[in-house]
Image (cartoon, rainbow, N blue to C red):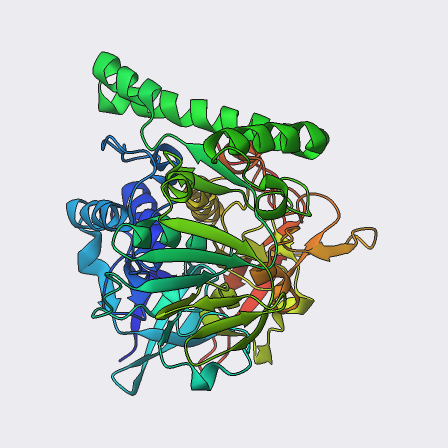
Length: 504
């Protein structure tokens, strides 16, 4: 017999654990389960094991709204974040609802039954479960492979080549010459971490990235905790950081030259006198066209000042037996080459969706409020902010799903589905972001629309009003009831209804 649940969550990472907490807090009697493809809680924070792995967002906003982050470091290392997620799951009993090793491959919606049938692969066997509502919290990273360009001659390199996404447990870089290819957040994290034990680490980049130095500890947060206690201080710190980040983002978009100048001056002060700042730390793009990288306590710049690390801006001509030859003719010796060249994206974790026998082509759908899909009933997904902490949006999506389910219960609805019937709404990319990992895969994702509610919002304050307090019945979300006939063998049918009331 196929097991049935009220809600089925895909993914036991940061988003999935948070979603489960919101659901079971709001509906103690409602059944749910989490299907997790891997064998552990934590998602991204369990997957990445490279040296120095950490957040690039402060934990007062990357942490859950309902569970204060109490450690001193606001920019935390990966193991600390993983402990936080797992402790949240254990304390709330969420871990008892997780089925590990269940990789969801397909989900089929039946309008006649008003439910999803989900297929997952577990130990080589297909497992089927049904649910009233399907909630994808799988993020958008592809876990089985990162992005690695083809490098001529790599096969003759006698050293070790490793991608950060697949870091070997036994890789010892002590006393070795290391070249890290890339200039994004992963490279900026790896270089100072590996420089602590390596003979020398070189960050090899094609072009510079914006890197800002921030204190790893939030002095104001610490003072507020001492004054108010953890639980009262947390929302104050959270909003303080939200406002600060938002203001800086808006200034960056409206006055990019001003922000470029501010970042350049700050960078120059942290580097040795006479350092060629414009070659190695002057990006070609504007601030926040791509996400800014963070150097906690200026660790990258300290490693450069101390001579433990260096930056080379050039292009790779080919690998040699002992390192890399660059377009300029320079040769870099290397024992270990780390290809921090980016991630690959996979929308909805690769799950195939089918609605009443019709396969859903994601690029032909439009994302409603950045969390549901046009034409796909009783379904939600989480995509976080690109200009702020992921969990800020994840918490809001969970809160909205709770409000939506309450609304459906209150009015006896079995089905809700976004419907874009406005011909004046034009298509846009779901994420208006210029990072390489986004541009490589954005055509595989749903589209956004030219105006609300079909945009993926990037303002937390705006989304608080829209998702936490805005109307559920806004004209674009359609509700219906499943009417069951009493004749033996007859199929049920769906009757469209538009709710007039708003959720309290």
